[in-house]
Image 1 (tube, each protein chain N blue to C red):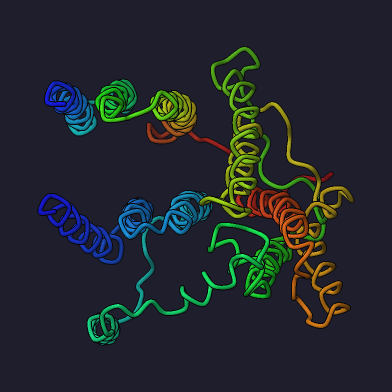
Image 2: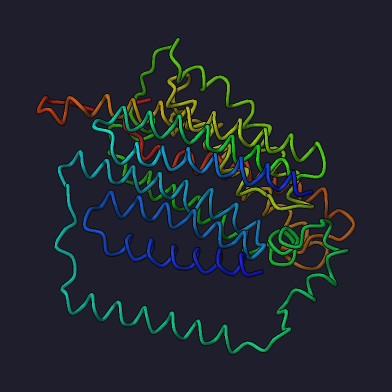
Length: 312
Length: 103
């Protein structure tokens, strides 16, 4: 017990130190590096709290993918000749912002400590209805059945983010190929990994979606794995990004939210919009999860690739 | 039971030594590629020892196989990332020595 307590205390201390370093660091790159480490430590913290689903999502999206987006933005800034942080807010404003953040953190901590013991929140209600949700993993039951509209809106937010990135495209390359051309020796080590890892990644991703109905896993985690596989394939120079005007690509982008909305509409016919009909819950939820996985993977990969830069 | 625990402690400690060595190399080695070398080689070996140590705590063969798979995948991922980092450095190093670089 003491060893676990020591570990948790050390982890909390590390999280605080790394968070402070990410915010207070001088260089942009250092701040990004600390932000990624912060994401990994938070994933560890979620593991300690037995929130494996959240830990997976935090490690894959919070640390991995967001880190990659930030590094991409940093390298763009560097190409534009912006090397350091701009002047930024004045010192009094920073102190005020820090004080407000500290107060919010203290208030949150006080609230958590003030919660009565043995209170389980909504988990008894979830456990009670789990049998009717079509899946055995309570997290998946909440995300895709009880509060399906939250997840639907999340998947739409991702799509809107990509549209925002694409809207920065100059007219000359509108609908063109995202990102810069990648070169790698076709007999090189990277090409070998680019051929060796994708099948493994595909299996892991399908397993993650399938396992999501009874164990930790799901569309967001699997989608991130698929996106990473695609990024590796592109960076190894095996395939190029598809042009943004490609019809198949756009179908893949809207497949997840589309299937989700269609199921929601069927639910409306049975009485409640976004209500999953009880007898068909498992096949419906799995269809949504697989369609969402494809859309999330494509959206995340294209977010990393950035706006179109070359004519189709 | 005690013998298994001793094996675990010994192997995990060996793994930690490799991690410390890799980190020392990252901090102390003179140039970019040596530092990358220290990091990737030592950490993969360290992770292998730790996985092997944890395997002695597992009760079934399935979990041991999963640990082996985790080590293998982490190794492959680390190797791919090392390649990417090294390539990025190749692109950048002429830049740092004053040459013009586009891309």
